[in-house]
Amino acid sequence: MSFDVEAVRRQFPVLAQRPYGKRLAFLDSGATSQKPQSVIDAVTRFYDRDNSNVHRGVYDLAERATAAFEGARKKIARFIGAEPREVIFTRGTTEGVNLVAQSWGRASVGPGDEILVTGMEHHSNIVPWQLLAAEKGAKLVVVPVDDRGEVHLADFERLIGPRTRIVAVTQVSNVLGTVNPIREITRLAHARGVPVLVDGAQAVPHEKVDVRDLDADFYVFSGHKMFGPTGIGVLYGKAKILEAMPPWQGGGDMILSVSFEGTKFNTIPYKFEAGTPDAAGAVGLGAAVDWLEGLDREGARAHERDLLDHATRRLQELPGLRIIGTAPGKAPVISFVMEGVHPHDVGTILDHEGVAVRAGHHCAQPLMERFGVPATVRASMALYNTREDVDQLVQGLHRVREMFP
Ligand code: PMP
Image 1 (cartoon, rainbow, N blue to C red):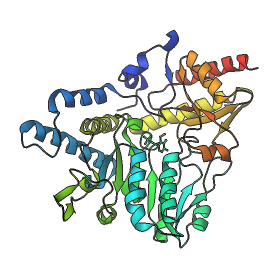
Image 2: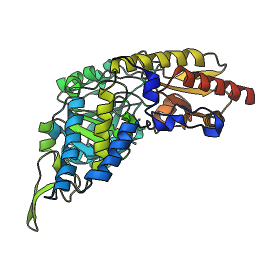
Image 3: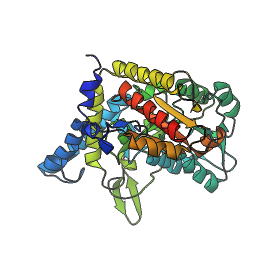
């Protein structure tokens, strides 16, 4: 099996369209990835054939729907090296962090305690902790980011103190592309008895993740960034920790029995899945896992590395362009600013050239402040991108320079 990008591209119907009559260079997969036909088909097939509520009916259709939903959980568990009961379906990364902050956090964090995050977190790994800290009289402590966009283990060592209750860190920065040394971070934190939540939203689309190997206590990610549907994501938690946590949302499916005197809660993972889940989304995510596992993932990684190297080299041709985030071993994400042009103008001009990039603060305003910019342009690549996409971006940027000399 070898990685064939053209064969991969043919499986993504969206990529064939021509905005403004131009070839589409989709370079915003960090925001959401496109979906292969097999994922689209899996969702359609579920509604065509298997749809019913899960865990409820005794009839054939309901059993098939439940089997499809639980089958997806098993696939995802295997994909990340977890047990199925450690896989909780959520709406996405954001909901996963909020669940941990509200359930684990409210039971475990008190006045004067500290929550350690890094300066490169997405808002979804900052704000849920701020809400918790405000409620409990705790505070956020921030691991600084250096000029290349890296964090240093020595800072974790220095900042994980007797009041630290949890470390919440992203595996891959959605702005800088920096890949953080999660294994070393969990080792340091665990040596001090502190659990670690890892935001894997930007990691799962690019690399093989094994939660046991990382030794993450919690690991959260979104289906839509890894070629699956929107509205579905995963919170992995170590079984022991999940079992000890109080429920978060109450409702159907998360109970064993209810009376007005009291309620017995269901076992994990159901304790954390109140209400009718996005079963079709889970099935679609299972199909995305199948699709990824059917690829030569090492080949895909090598392809992404080539794209990043090519893009980094070519962007340096442009006068007045500054790349933000230059850590070695980055994921294929390049943020940059162009002297004298607002990122939104760059984005709009590129759009007319058929190039889709993100312009803005990327839900990481503290990081923008760290680098002294209000916003950046971000080209984020996935395994279906090609050097042609990158060249189209560079050509578009030359056009920007002509308009803003
Ligand atoms: N963390 C990171 C690193 C992200 O890139 C994103 C999405 N931009 C999120 C969290 C939030 O993911 P979602 O919106 O799918 O919940």
